[in-house]
Image 1: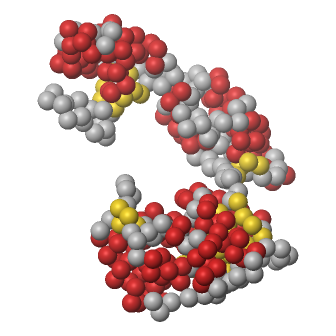
Image 2 (image 1 turned 90 degrees about the vertical axis):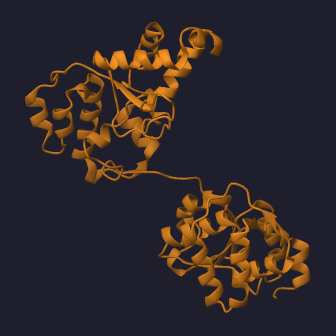
Image 3 (image 1 turned 90 degrees about the horizontal axis):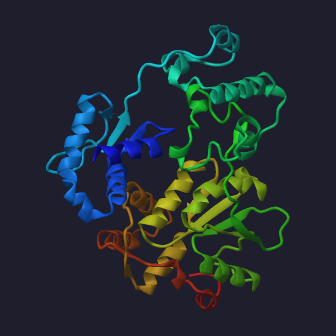
Length: 356
């Protein structure tokens, strides 16, 4: 058993001493030839005993804040390999030289981070900060390529394979290195105006095209003649809406949101309201009333409920004088049911002839 554990440490813990119990056990099962061979070695019980021995020998230790598994012989889910004390490898005079712009407290406390590669990054960051006032803002990827020779250095989600915490250790932020995290810009359609003043965000693709066809035909949708329509692409709009200033003046535009009648749709709307509170965003309540009139509902699957989101929706119904429909909204919520916005089709909009 110990042979497989050591093999895991050699192969998987070269760059990161921390590891997860489930990954180690999975590795052992795989390397010993499967579950049956694992049982022959003594299974989880033998695994547990070997881990305790390694812990007593101070080769490994549990991460105290980690949760425990629910086994008969419980173990912490997260562990780390114990390393012997590391001496400082950077010269004191170099640290002092760069300390006029950088905070080295973490590196002094944890000399294991004092590597040649880390020092190279620090020199690049220092030189950038000296010229910061004369530098322009760049994307995170562009700045990473400049400072760390890897455009995905800070954005790579697989952090287990590389140590990319240099900014954190220096107590620096993306703002300090003038790096901006851009999302993908939303898809939108402009009906041909030079200045966009009224916008409707549609959660789903098909509804976006239905509204687009209706507006192109000169039909007002729920009494509104929008200058532009945005395809929200579900929750992606929460981040991509930051590009609003690319197509309109945020302080001068009126934005309406229409999504599915379900917890996710309500969450998106509240998130937009909270994140972009300087923009005039409101719910297209009339569209939701039409969904209620359709009176067809479906079971909602695996959607997280947030009572604050429901309260936000109910408040909009109240403010727009549609109190009589609030009970139905609550009923949908309690029954875990939803109404997709796709019920408002192009044909439906034509029949409405611009209003309800």
